[in-house]
Length: 219
Image (tube, rainbow, N blue to C red; front, side, top):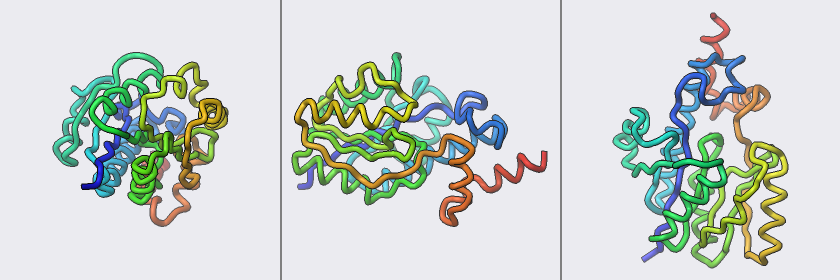
Protein backbone atom coordinates (compact mmCIF):
# COMPACT_ATOMS: atom_id res chain seq x y z
CA UNK A 1 0.00 0.00 0.00
CA UNK A 2 1.35 3.46 -0.92
CA UNK A 3 2.02 5.60 2.13
CA UNK A 4 -0.45 8.48 2.44
CA UNK A 5 1.05 11.96 2.67
CA UNK A 6 -1.34 14.53 4.18
CA UNK A 7 -1.71 17.83 2.32
CA UNK A 8 -2.11 20.81 4.64
CA UNK A 9 -3.77 23.83 3.01
CA UNK A 10 -3.08 27.00 4.98
CA UNK A 11 -5.87 29.56 4.49
CA UNK A 12 -7.29 32.74 5.97
CA UNK A 13 -11.01 33.41 6.12
CA UNK A 14 -11.88 35.48 3.01
CA UNK A 15 -13.28 38.51 4.81
CA UNK A 16 -13.24 41.85 2.93
CA UNK A 17 -10.34 44.00 4.01
CA UNK A 18 -8.50 41.09 5.64
CA UNK A 19 -7.12 39.20 2.63
CA UNK A 20 -5.37 40.08 -0.65
CA UNK A 21 -5.02 43.65 0.58
CA UNK A 22 -2.44 44.57 -2.07
CA UNK A 23 -5.07 43.78 -4.71
CA UNK A 24 -7.76 46.00 -3.18
CA UNK A 25 -6.95 48.96 -5.51
CA UNK A 26 -7.58 46.71 -8.51
CA UNK A 27 -10.48 44.65 -7.19
CA UNK A 28 -11.97 46.46 -4.19
CA UNK A 29 -12.17 44.82 -0.79
CA UNK A 30 -15.07 42.59 -1.81
CA UNK A 31 -13.45 41.54 -5.05
CA UNK A 32 -10.14 40.78 -3.34
CA UNK A 33 -11.96 38.65 -0.77
CA UNK A 34 -13.86 36.79 -3.48
CA UNK A 35 -10.60 36.11 -5.33
CA UNK A 36 -9.10 34.70 -2.12
CA UNK A 37 -12.11 32.43 -1.73
CA UNK A 38 -11.79 31.23 -5.34
CA UNK A 39 -8.09 30.54 -4.87
CA UNK A 40 -8.82 28.53 -1.72
CA UNK A 41 -11.47 26.44 -3.46
CA UNK A 42 -9.18 25.85 -6.45
CA UNK A 43 -6.35 24.75 -4.16
CA UNK A 44 -8.64 22.32 -2.36
CA UNK A 45 -9.87 20.95 -5.70
CA UNK A 46 -6.27 20.36 -6.78
CA UNK A 47 -5.25 18.80 -3.47
CA UNK A 48 -8.15 16.38 -3.38
CA UNK A 49 -7.68 15.48 -7.04
CA UNK A 50 -4.01 14.68 -6.42
CA UNK A 51 -5.12 11.98 -3.95
CA UNK A 52 -1.71 11.68 -2.28
CA UNK A 53 -3.24 11.66 1.19
CA UNK A 54 -5.92 13.27 3.36
CA UNK A 55 -6.42 17.00 2.87
CA UNK A 56 -6.57 19.28 5.92
CA UNK A 57 -7.70 22.89 5.66
CA UNK A 58 -5.66 24.73 8.31
CA UNK A 59 -7.79 27.75 9.17
CA UNK A 60 -7.24 31.30 10.43
CA UNK A 61 -8.49 32.79 12.60
CA UNK A 62 -10.17 29.47 13.51
CA UNK A 63 -12.40 26.77 12.06
CA UNK A 64 -15.67 28.48 12.99
CA UNK A 65 -15.88 30.77 9.95
CA UNK A 66 -18.81 29.75 7.67
CA UNK A 67 -16.55 29.65 4.60
CA UNK A 68 -14.48 26.87 6.13
CA UNK A 69 -17.56 24.82 6.96
CA UNK A 70 -18.73 25.12 3.35
CA UNK A 71 -15.29 23.97 2.20
CA UNK A 72 -15.39 21.03 4.60
CA UNK A 73 -18.68 19.82 3.20
CA UNK A 74 -17.99 20.59 -0.46
CA UNK A 75 -14.47 19.17 -0.63
CA UNK A 76 -14.71 16.49 2.08
CA UNK A 77 -11.66 17.81 3.93
CA UNK A 78 -10.78 18.02 7.61
CA UNK A 79 -10.50 21.36 9.41
CA UNK A 80 -7.79 22.38 11.84
CA UNK A 81 -7.06 25.77 13.46
CA UNK A 82 -3.80 27.56 12.73
CA UNK A 83 -3.56 28.89 16.28
CA UNK A 84 -1.55 31.88 17.46
CA UNK A 85 1.86 33.14 16.45
CA UNK A 86 3.57 34.38 13.32
CA UNK A 87 3.44 32.50 10.04
CA UNK A 88 6.44 30.35 10.92
CA UNK A 89 4.98 29.29 14.24
CA UNK A 90 1.68 28.41 12.63
CA UNK A 91 3.32 26.43 9.84
CA UNK A 92 5.52 24.53 12.27
CA UNK A 93 2.50 23.76 14.45
CA UNK A 94 0.59 22.39 11.46
CA UNK A 95 3.52 20.13 10.56
CA UNK A 96 4.02 18.97 14.15
CA UNK A 97 0.36 17.96 14.35
CA UNK A 98 0.37 16.14 11.01
CA UNK A 99 3.70 14.42 11.58
CA UNK A 100 2.59 13.06 14.94
CA UNK A 101 0.54 10.50 13.00
CA UNK A 102 2.12 10.49 9.50
CA UNK A 103 5.65 9.86 8.21
CA UNK A 104 5.57 12.95 5.95
CA UNK A 105 3.36 15.92 5.13
CA UNK A 106 3.05 18.66 2.52
CA UNK A 107 1.96 22.24 3.21
CA UNK A 108 0.71 24.73 0.63
CA UNK A 109 -0.93 28.13 0.77
CA UNK A 110 -3.73 29.30 -1.48
CA UNK A 111 -1.90 32.05 -3.39
CA UNK A 112 -0.68 29.83 -6.24
CA UNK A 113 -3.58 29.04 -8.57
CA UNK A 114 -1.12 27.40 -10.97
CA UNK A 115 -0.62 24.58 -8.46
CA UNK A 116 -0.93 21.22 -10.26
CA UNK A 117 -1.95 17.83 -8.93
CA UNK A 118 1.31 16.54 -10.43
CA UNK A 119 3.24 18.95 -8.17
CA UNK A 120 1.74 17.32 -5.11
CA UNK A 121 2.33 13.85 -6.52
CA UNK A 122 5.99 14.69 -7.17
CA UNK A 123 6.42 16.10 -3.67
CA UNK A 124 4.79 13.07 -2.07
CA UNK A 125 6.95 10.70 -4.11
CA UNK A 126 10.15 12.49 -3.08
CA UNK A 127 9.16 12.36 0.59
CA UNK A 128 8.29 8.67 0.38
CA UNK A 129 11.72 8.07 -1.16
CA UNK A 130 13.44 9.61 1.87
CA UNK A 131 13.86 13.26 0.94
CA UNK A 132 13.89 15.39 4.08
CA UNK A 133 12.55 18.64 2.58
CA UNK A 134 10.65 19.42 -0.61
CA UNK A 135 10.38 23.05 -1.73
CA UNK A 136 8.31 24.71 -4.43
CA UNK A 137 10.25 27.90 -5.24
CA UNK A 138 8.18 31.02 -5.93
CA UNK A 139 9.13 33.73 -8.41
CA UNK A 140 9.00 36.36 -5.65
CA UNK A 141 11.76 34.74 -3.60
CA UNK A 142 9.54 32.73 -1.28
CA UNK A 143 8.13 29.25 -1.68
CA UNK A 144 4.66 27.99 -2.53
CA UNK A 145 5.05 24.47 -1.10
CA UNK A 146 7.10 22.82 1.58
CA UNK A 147 7.12 19.14 2.44
CA UNK A 148 8.79 17.56 5.46
CA UNK A 149 9.43 14.22 7.10
CA UNK A 150 10.19 15.84 10.46
CA UNK A 151 8.86 19.08 12.04
CA UNK A 152 12.09 21.09 11.76
CA UNK A 153 11.50 24.30 13.73
CA UNK A 154 14.73 25.88 12.44
CA UNK A 155 13.22 26.18 8.96
CA UNK A 156 10.54 28.53 10.31
CA UNK A 157 12.10 30.42 13.22
CA UNK A 158 12.97 34.12 12.84
CA UNK A 159 12.19 34.12 9.12
CA UNK A 160 11.56 37.46 7.34
CA UNK A 161 8.25 36.32 5.89
CA UNK A 162 6.83 38.15 2.85
CA UNK A 163 10.28 39.16 1.64
CA UNK A 164 12.39 37.91 -1.25
CA UNK A 165 14.91 36.46 1.22
CA UNK A 166 12.76 33.58 2.41
CA UNK A 167 13.77 31.00 -0.20
CA UNK A 168 17.48 31.75 0.05
CA UNK A 169 17.49 31.60 3.84
CA UNK A 170 15.52 28.35 3.78
CA UNK A 171 17.98 26.79 1.34
CA UNK A 172 20.88 27.88 3.55
CA UNK A 173 19.28 26.34 6.63
CA UNK A 174 18.64 23.11 4.75
CA UNK A 175 22.26 22.95 3.61
CA UNK A 176 23.61 23.78 7.08
CA UNK A 177 21.78 20.77 8.50
CA UNK A 178 22.84 18.47 5.66
CA UNK A 179 19.23 17.70 4.84
CA UNK A 180 18.33 15.92 1.63
CA UNK A 181 16.23 18.33 -0.47
CA UNK A 182 14.19 18.22 -3.65
CA UNK A 183 12.82 21.26 -5.50
CA UNK A 184 9.77 21.48 -7.72
CA UNK A 185 9.13 23.87 -10.60
CA UNK A 186 9.18 27.62 -10.01
CA UNK A 187 5.66 29.05 -9.85
CA UNK A 188 4.13 32.47 -9.21
CA UNK A 189 2.11 33.60 -6.22
CA UNK A 190 -0.66 36.09 -6.96
CA UNK A 191 -0.30 38.87 -4.41
CA UNK A 192 0.40 42.16 -6.24
CA UNK A 193 -1.20 44.08 -9.14
CA UNK A 194 1.55 42.91 -11.51
CA UNK A 195 0.82 39.32 -10.50
CA UNK A 196 -2.85 39.88 -11.28
CA UNK A 197 -1.93 41.16 -14.75
CA UNK A 198 0.00 37.95 -15.44
CA UNK A 199 -2.95 35.90 -14.20
CA UNK A 200 -5.29 37.68 -16.60
CA UNK A 201 -2.88 36.97 -19.48
CA UNK A 202 -3.27 33.21 -18.92
CA UNK A 203 -6.24 31.74 -20.77
CA UNK A 204 -6.50 28.91 -18.24
CA UNK A 205 -6.37 31.16 -15.16
CA UNK A 206 -7.98 34.43 -16.31
CA UNK A 207 -11.56 33.26 -15.50
CA UNK A 208 -10.62 33.30 -11.81
CA UNK A 209 -10.42 37.10 -11.83
CA UNK A 210 -11.64 38.58 -15.11
CA UNK A 211 -15.20 39.21 -13.92
CA UNK A 212 -13.94 40.77 -10.68
CA UNK A 213 -11.73 43.20 -12.59
CA UNK A 214 -14.60 44.06 -14.94
CA UNK A 215 -16.96 44.65 -12.04
CA UNK A 216 -14.46 46.99 -10.38
CA UNK A 217 -13.91 48.97 -13.56
CA UNK A 218 -17.65 49.46 -13.95
CA UNK A 219 -17.80 51.06 -10.53
